[in-house]
Image (cartoon, rainbow, N blue to C red; front, top):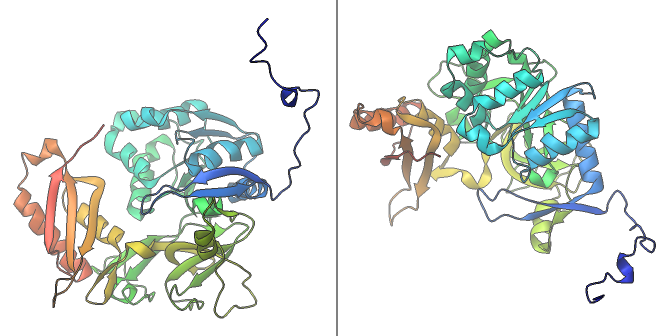
Length: 410
């Protein structure tokens, strides 16, 4: 008999010795999405995962009698930890479907929730929009979503209009607004940082955009053209949160926007084989630490503020558009543009600034996809003019260039 491929003694089960694994031992390398920079491997410990799974359980008070339904890809932290590991941790029966199946027909997701009697699910904001946009009243009425108690919404900006539209569209199926669960987290914090609120419904703040340019929080009426809408993403779970000036590293006041810093057992060990970036991102220390804050902190790169203990995110530090010394949030401008015409495809736009020419100012560029089926029947010049007027009215700046491009879908 040929023994050249025979296993050596190290593979003999009788001689195998279990490795010494503790709470701080590495368990997995989880890569960041790389949406704004190259992906990095986040080193998670066994303790990170266990703590975060328990924090997710605390956020919605789930038990083994509940049922979960998820379509999120398992290579994404929301899919792996939120949809699989945290459900295993609690002992929940979970139905999983392919992300491709959802993309091709979003209503498959909600039909599975109805059939499986799902109590908890999770998805990015766009998924809830797609279910509203692609479903008919007859399809909605055929569902029974009265079982769905927790519909987590995270991984991207949460829109108040999306929550209201989904709750309204699926009210005939038994869905309630109180089941909407905006959440906040990131790969560097394993997954969840905050989720769930004491009032039972997501908090919404309407803030003056001119004040936001100066990182100040000033409430205005919802109907005010200068109002920017932000949704609360829940209270921190097993995390210490500090809102910090990203330049001075001093804690911000209660009415100021700053970078969100996080400390706690959910913060990962660091980046795999990137010691300098690990030190810069995971080893942040406050310039003026208070007794209520421990450290070191994880610098999330996200901007936001706290209100009544709930986290509100406003944007990304590196994404801010700066024109003539004033800061603007691209996601806010993009949402304003999206509302200008039904020919503009939901969630398929971008706003950014070019470098300033010599002696001049930075220029705002707006790009958005248009629905090919509606474009032929739409005056696109009028749409461009509507975009320019909306940006000027709501944000007080001019869109120097507006580019409409053909929508490409699966």
